[in-house]
Length: 356
Ligand code: MRU
Image 1: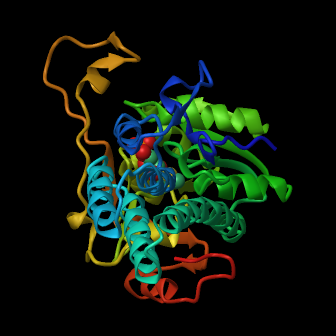
Image 2: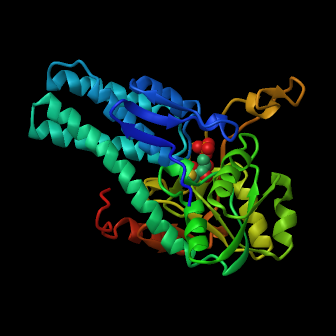
Image 3: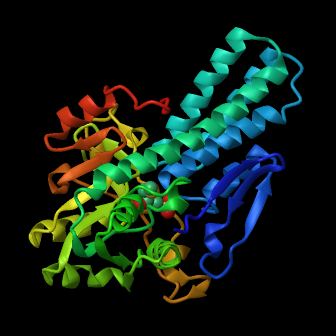
């Protein structure tokens, strides 16, 4: 089954698929400067919470690798600057900060062990590659746990793109659907287009189509109509940040889907790695919501579709925990009350091969 590769570490540099140009063109760029990786994250060349984390880790490794510092001290201050630049790219998805904290920890370990700059740089490259490898294993595990909750046959719905393009593995929400489909469940996926950036229409529809999973693309304002039909067995979305009480930030439009799901007795599930948990914040009120350019609302692929008026573009919204039936992670399934279940999962030993 086809799996997209949004990002790859190579000897030439970090190769990133330009998701802004999908589905029309499959174009990749090779990055050798961490500043360009930071720009690529900010400009959505690569997007999706876990994939942003992988890109940040690789950007940090790239910065260390190409540093001209002649001492550990000089490399240390340069590395702090590299991480600060990458930190400022996008505010909502916590995977970005998680990945950079992990790279900083590894940097501190390496510099405590050796003053050989070549070994330190090599260690950073290995850590970034390990982050990517682990995302792949994580997605597979989330997929296995979540697939059990999918119907034997019938319609399921998702939102935005939480597929391979968004993680560098098989995807979180789409990973669940993919595993369930491979198990023989006869699923048909309803894909809301996800205005204004059209991650559903451009990316999820593209991924599912290439993987041979049946789908129907719908506009965002058709969600209620389809949920009311009684034919949708489950909804599964990804997440950008999950607060300690289970409130979950995800792509704008997710909240209204969750409310409509409750109204129509359709279970609403979230699929996300533990790295998406932010147990330092009590609830969704504390999640910073990215405001993107209003031009993405007034224009569609560069073509103006509205007069020159004020437009708003919050890129994410928060779904209160009470609408979420379960959260699938690589360590198991969290159920309400989430204050307890998320904390318990966060302290569950990591499966072999995964280091957090
Ligand atoms: O703005 P984006 O495209 O980065 O937003 C992506 C989403 O909201 C995804 O649903 C989320 O990151 C989960 S991806 C596995």
